Length: 89
Image 1: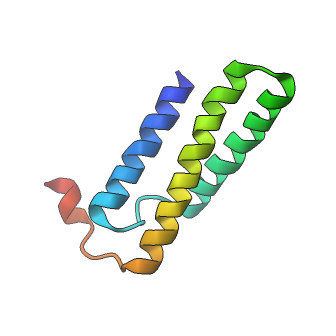
Image 2: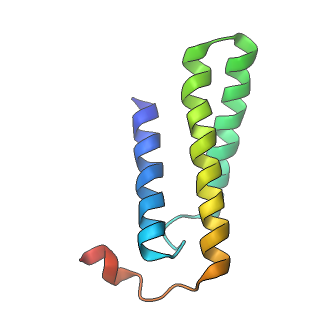
């Protein structure tokens, strides 16, 4: 269950960032901690050879890296405009 909630929240955040072209709704430290926590548990799962630990956290590593890439791209490229308008429509 945790896997689906983490994946859905990550994908929703990425969708909001792409739609608004602003990283205001995706804090950097939250994305970084998602990546680091998932990476540490993925390594733990590899060391234990446990697919049920490795697989969901491996997906978390991919999603966390994608969030950080989006953050790097959109934080340098554009400045935030009126960000509340696209979310209310």
